Length: 163
Image (cartoon, rainbow, N blue to C red; front, side, top):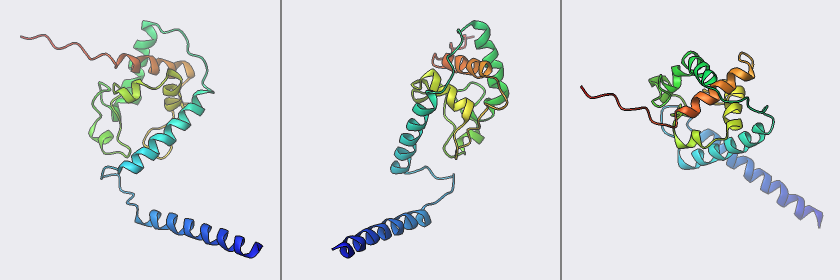
C-alpha cells in the first residue's frame, strides 16, 4: 500500500517541478514590457508580506518638525530624485524604464504605506528591484527625515501664479 502513495507523491513533485521549469523558461526577464496581471499581483502580495514583517523591527519615529522635513527634502534630491524625479511625482526616464517601474511617491499606493513600512523600504531597499537600501550609508534619523518629506508629497503643489 505504501508504493502507490510514494508513486503519487513522486509524480506530483515531478509535475510541479516541470511546471516551474516551464514557467521559468517561458518567462521573459526583460524590463521593457509591462508585467502581466499575475506577476503584478504576486509581486504586490510578496512585497506587502515582506513590508509588514520588516516594519515590525523599525525603530519608533522621532517627532516631525519643519527642520526634519527640510533635511529630508535635501537628502531626497541627492539620493532619490535620479529615479523618482525632482518633484517625487514624475519618475525620470531612468525610473520609468526600471522593472518594476519607479513610482510616484505621491501615489496612493506609496502614501498608503505606514511610516514604518516606508522607513523599511528606504532603509533595506527591495531586492530584485532598482530600490537600493540606504541603511548602511544613512542614519535612522536621516531615513526618518526622508519619510517625513515623502509624506508632504501627498499634497499637490500649489499651481503657478498666472501672468
